[in-house]
Image 1: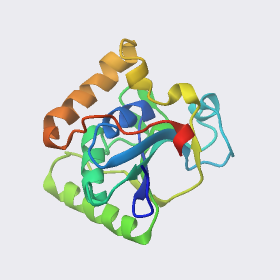
Image 2 (image 1 turned 90 degrees about the vertical axis):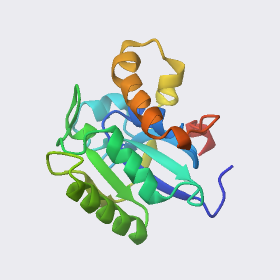
Image 3 (image 1 turned 45 degrees about the vertical axis):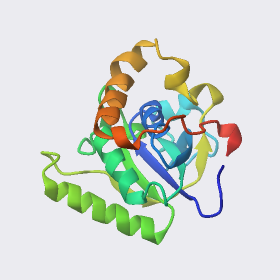
Image 4 (image 1 turned 60 degrees about the vertical axis):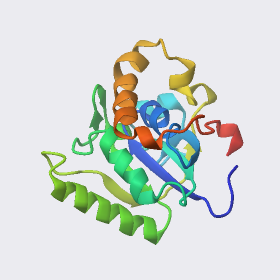
Length: 191
């Protein structure tokens, strides 16, 4: 259940199916909704966003309990499950709709995002500089219902097996102690 003390963030890191599949398993994440943000067109469709002309990125909007998982911890997971050093590309997905971005919802989130990116940049985790955008939140449009809970609904689909599953396996290995016993709510209907 989402309360007034919970926080919201919006993250872009390639295909939203990959991000959703990981974050719905993280303790403290209460709801994950796949959608679109950062563009010019109101209420875009998946096809319009994939065409690359709307300016939107595929994103997940997360509602989380900061007493269980901090924004800093969320960003640590986020920056470990996609390549934040590639501009407008994640694996086979190419275009600005697959950019790496943190859409902050408060000045505090902006400060934390800048700090986390500096720290990870200095750590040597990535050989190349991090190119993740840090930008104010823009209107969020939930994706169509068949894009919600995609990985759980389509585990045998080739994209799920070859692209999403390795990211989920890496996350489970690195964050074993932080796994939920039940997936977070993901339906756009519950937002």
